[in-house]
Length: 450
Image (cartoon, rainbow, N blue to C red; front, side, top):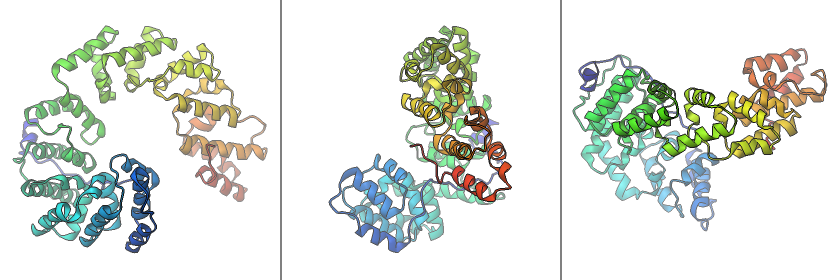
């Protein structure tokens, strides 16, 4: 069956998948581009200039702009402005430009007229409509890196086929998988039901996962036999791991774990949970084993932790024992915390200190609260811990919790959102003003990590 899929002789039902979403703000209207650009100081240089330009001219969030500035930097706005003007001439909307720059920031450094314009003109000359062109290039902008017109056209056609397939359950991909290896291999994955958001990065990836033929087929067969779901990112991770590592390398990795007391079956079960754990070197694997040992776990407990949480292997870069001891935990308490939450050894010292000190100093919970519920160290401060704690403090200030002590950590932070609302907000439905205030706090309007 695999060979039929790989050679395109078996048609599988094509599924609809949602369009790619990107964490950026909508861009301002066209007039905002020129006005915002005019307010930038011409003397600003380097990364700061890049961030300012991306925020003020493209409407990106500061966080996204900072991420982009680490990949590309420009010291004057002339070049990126010419790129933006060119895209607008081809009727790219604000949302399209936002997606393009977020995923291919290097586009802003290209010479608009000599590098980018000829490619857009070529694609238009082949009959691409404005709506089709803007949609496809906003999804996979990196195909614009391709210099050869014939290759560019082939990749564009392939992406168009996928986009059209996802818009109609009755549409069948007509492009035969007889082109370059990369297109043929991505086609095979598409036939397995892999969605756009996983397919397109593979199409333009330089890591080689879908470049070969025989090796790709062998790796794909193994991943399918292991039961990975082709619609998930974990499938792609597993495929990449098996493609990039030789049989000898894999055998060596497995032998390292065997020497520590795990079986070959254990290793592959761990692989199914967290494929990227296989990239860890022998040094990192043994260091993790030693870290658990320093935390007070015996060999059997360490092996159990490896089996259940392979993501923690190789992740410990600091002395977590010292971090916990400095915060006031006893060695026995450290052992209990790590047994209950093995992957806490991968948390940074800064994160552990920030969360523990917030719970102890801001909420007056004893350190034993963390020992009883160490999972709190893995919760988001901004999304869960701080908003919920602010609700608890608001209720305590009004004497509505029956005492001066906060409720148990588990009761306040471990429960689902629905249960938290039931316990601490909806029970006050007779006071709608209070409920409105508590909901505002919970939504983060007054949340602060200080």
